[in-house]
Amino acid sequence: MPRPTTSPHLRAGGRARRAALVVAIGAVLLVGCGSSDPDAASTEASTASVSATSTSDDGAATTTTSSPATTSSGPVDVTHLPVGDGRWTTTPEAGYLYTCRTTFDGGGAQQRGPWFNDDGTTWDATKKGVVDGEVAWDHQFTTEVAGDVRRFVGNDLPDHTTGEFPIGADDDVRAYDANPNSISEQVLSIEVPATPTVADQPTCLRGEVGVTLTGAAIFDAFDAGGRDAVAWEAQDHCQGHPQERGAYHYHSLTTCIADPGTGHSNLLGYAYDGFGIYGLRGEDGEELTDADLDECHGHTHTITWDGEQVEMYHYHATREFPYTVGCFRGTPIQQTLTG
Ligand SMILES: [Zn+2]
Ligand SMILES: [Zn+2]
Image 1 (tube, rainbow, N blue to C red):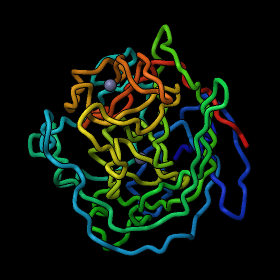
Image 2 (tube, rainbow, N blue to C red):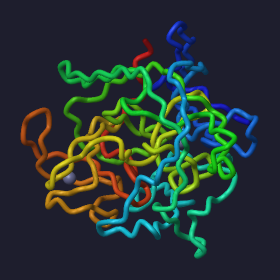
Image 3 (cartoon, rainbow, N blue to C red):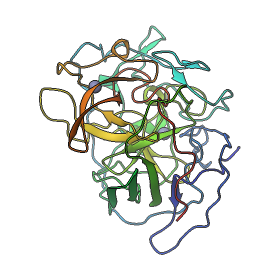
């Protein structure tokens, strides 16, 4: 099975050890989060965000049963979400994922869960299986602006509890996605433009798209097979799970970050081009859909940015594929700090 060997946006390193770093920008060997073979190391659709595997032993795992986090409200029928399988494009297009990846090697969940509808084209987010567990982590995450740069430093362990990974033998979702990976601490060290600008042309995605203010990474909407990772893969009660090197990540907006209020959603994360990623609500406080957003899944209007009112491009999460970022509207970072 091909393994990613590239850019260390997130670099694995146990608390007591530091893994060697492999830097090879541009490689796009991509395989999926889950694995059809429970004994195999599961792999992730990404630009290879991590460079080494380490297993964290912190966090006492307990098993609980969680309910699906997504509820039905707003303009999107979450009981009939179109499955985004194959909705990739080599030219930016709204509702699609503009991906640098043009081959998909397979991998990921091994079987459709019962939350797929009988129509064969939609899935029901209210029925999505949830990975059991409530595991707490030693979260570390800081952000700062220094001159033209916004810097994130952390360990990719979220500020919320996660499910228990590897997925337990008695977890009902294991029948559909036997993700054998453990969550482990990473070295997350990222610098993006503090005040990004729109580029002449959008840039395609390679897997990682940004970081959430929970301290954990956001990946794009695909698994290794070019399938809708949110529809297919088993995630926990915060919509996250680990890839083969232990990096915990989301493929959609986590419900474990607060976005209170009635107006425009809050800033909930940053894409790797420096633009903000906001929640579901637009300027009028109404939930947005793909139809409200451009081909990169964003739009431009006045927002509060580092305490100032500025007219600026930004992304929004939606309940629909591609969920967060469809392409980079600005200029994404080419590599992160190597530490
Ligand atoms: Zn994943
Ligand atoms: Zn907006």
